Image (cartoon, rainbow, N blue to C red; front, side, top):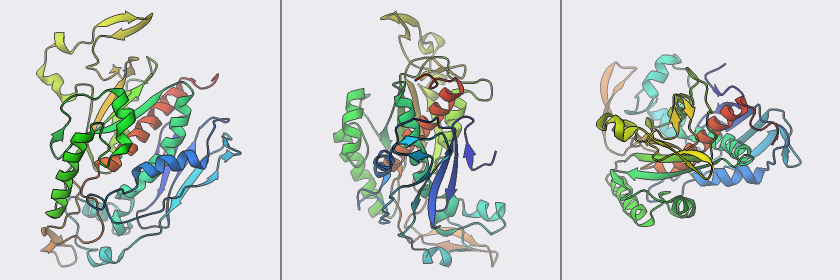
Length: 363
């Protein structure tokens, strides 16, 4: 399988570049009869579009999805599903000017080495966050598939610029508030504080990072394929494929190194005839298999690499050091736009693993 594809039963293949003609996805393995329309996909795509001149790129794309195959009269046919959005608002001249001066924090230099200089460098090409539109399109199909067995995936911003939530929000707060504020945060008051921190960084010509948490509800126990296809391993790999992702943790994450086993162990109980755990420090995964508890995973995103400050680089043609000032249109923080992307990626991995266990065959 090519490096542009992911999954075993729900297989996605992403294509396109930031300033190329389009960005798209091919999904193979989706069962027939699933209710699916362009409106379903468009609703998800709209969640990642820029929403504030204070913190977002000024690049405005219509991002209107076109379904080319695999969906007919409002249902999937069982054939490969191909969807795309066209890139219309591109400005590539600035990238011609810095072609041989790799931008700090970007993949420019390793990409030049890997592809011997033939890679599409405009806007970062294949390494741009623009490709996440494809993840969202695939995620829309995966989410509709998960609905058939009542699995729900949520995501929200839990930290930006070191500003975190004072307490864990309820599921109702997440469902009600996340897509009603710019920062995609469940706490509207903290969202305002986060927004100011991003705007301040932008005014300084700088950027900030943050953390997105995803919660998957009603995942059946025993989902996953250890050793090398463990559910959390596949999930982590998929999340690291989101541009800008630099860390992934499940449950209490790295804090497991600070607590004792008696605290970390999730003890079992029975509630309404169902096996549960009294805590969920494991984040819903043990031994690479789902436990039946909410699957909780957090993804850390680095500060946006394109900043307005002067930085040192090299001129690859001259073989000398040089300075660079990044122009163009860039976010000051990608975390809010990453929220629906994380949501989609988690849904894609769950759909793939559930299909491996034939969970949708009789639904």
